[in-house]
Amino acid sequence: MNKNLKTLTNGIINENPTLRLVLGTCPTLAVTTAAINGVGMGIAATIVLICSNAVISLLRNVIPNKVRIPAFITIIAGFVSVVQMLVKAFTPSIDKALGIFLPLIVVNCIILARAEMFASKNAVVPSILDGLGMGIGFTCTLTLMGMIREFLGNGTIFDIAVTKGHIAPMIIFLLPPGGFFVFGMLIAASNALAKKKGKTVVETIGCENCPSRGICGKVSCEQTAESEVETNE
Image 1 (cartoon, rainbow, N blue to C red):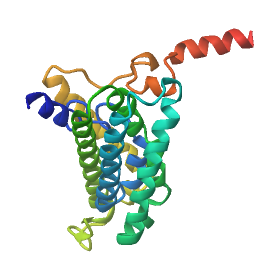
Image 2: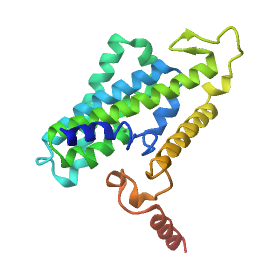
Image 3: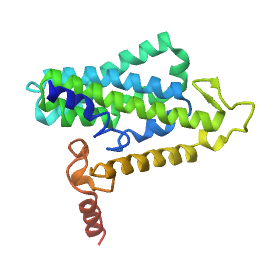
């Protein structure tokens, strides 16, 4: 039970996919202009994570190693299609707000990384817990970013007026620069807490230490750059 609990909480705290592993930054920055958007994207990604992890774990001894990535993407795409249709049917406003980033969950680094690094190597129950934990961590980060940006940029939280009409909103927080600023501040806070607890902070680790290296290849960026220089010479 302790092992399962550790697997569940790992994605929420120790290996938060957004603040600790710095994965899925594209939707993180793009959809968090409002708190409700963060909740919608987070829940959609969580459902896909849980379902895809479960299926990939069940088929881990059946899928040939050479075609594992295309197989993973096919499985993930199936669940994303189901989730997208459900969102379109029941919450069209969220579907409109998320736009292209909802179907792009198919190639979300968080989902592919957990499929490659965890689900393909572990049993079904731990894989489901891993997907749930990572999904909760992702959802919490997106919701927090959305709340901060919506409050500062519009004076509301979940469309409920807080300072709207009393204090002029800082529109920049609804724009890309504001998104990068809030994201950077949250990573800085995460690093400070990690350092205080004696854990590794987020830093440049190179491709060879990246948790997603199994997806895009294990050759480091430095080695790739050196190869390009030698080729040009």
